[in-house]
Length: 341
Image: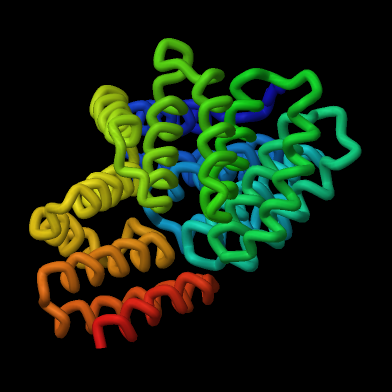
């Protein structure tokens, strides 16, 4: 799109913001994007301003500023910037869903993703619809609404059975596999993750490959599968993220996987060292992931006989899950509390 009336200051700010993102300085990239957006809006270039606000939200998300990114994404869909097209509006709703999920607003995240899916249900752009359904399933699964998540997975599986981009199909298989694991259908989980793995390669997109291996490891560990394949997923994700760099959230989740693996391998003390560090974080980890870390730390404390410490951290896990709107996970934390009592 040509922006004939944009001043040179806009292009300078945009270029600088993209360079900061390239260097993984997400906070600086967000600031640069905000500056570019303000310059564009002052020049009356609403579309360019909207694009830069969208870029700002993406960077705030990667910087771990979940509440701020959710607030700005909400303004993108309903505020003064105004989405330039229906497709752009759907993309903003997807971003809002992801931001709300990271901020621990799980029911609102599912609602935003469903709006995006509805906006693009009859759309020729199947890619945006698949991304919307992906976000919807992830939010429902995090909420513990597994029946709904599995029903949505069936719809998504039918959509990607038609001709879609291989990487997009892979991402769909990936989230469907996640839900299967969460439903204790390990065989289906493994099958869908194998389908996903066949579509990803480090040569084609190292970032996606790293994120898939990280997520696949997390799901396998949640199903107590601590085999050589799970360790390979962990190591691939760690190596790839070291090569390309990642957001603070990426590194925290890698550490959570490594701690979970270590715990299941029988080394509770080493796991405790990793998990205590994660549970001390003030920001950068969503409430539901903090809950996961605290729950795992509680289990590790129980394994070492430190029941008093376990009680404190399991109470915190339950609280974090409740905050995020994941009552089933909170109940699980309380079950461990009853066990150690």
